[in-house]
Image 1 (cartoon, one colour):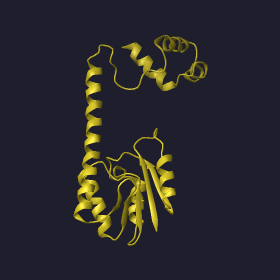
Image 2: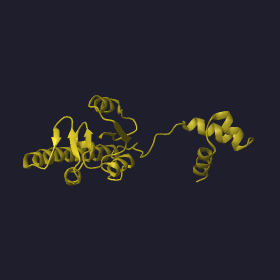
Image 3: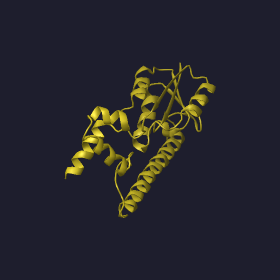
Image 4: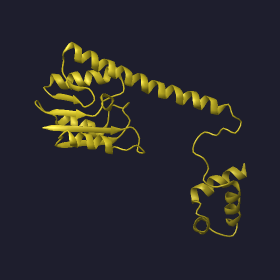
Length: 184
């Protein structure tokens, strides 16, 4: 049987291009998920690996859909091939255990790992620069302005949390946190 696997790293990314390529390749069953490639414990991928049998073909669009580290990815592909499972990477070709295939596989996984490490490094550099700014605040931005919170806290003097929440749209938990901050 021919299985496909599609993966993107975040819920905001789109799987459609990969799914279409796998369908065009004739995959009979496609597993997909939005899960980081740095984690080995991806639920859909784990399920797929558990049902693959000798003679099956696993198709992915790019090598980095398997893993983002050279060691992890190379070992995984080697294990699959040793189990008698064909591994077809659409932008490279069919993988096998020949020396040239191993070299290509390791080079591509090395580039994928390098790319991931560079993303992490740039993110850390950007955060370090942002932290130097006096107005830096870690975490999500506030949804409500200071004026809106103050107004809602004022309403609490004559109304219940539930009433203020329905009037302002500001949740009870946000109001409680704001009230604690204003007392300090």
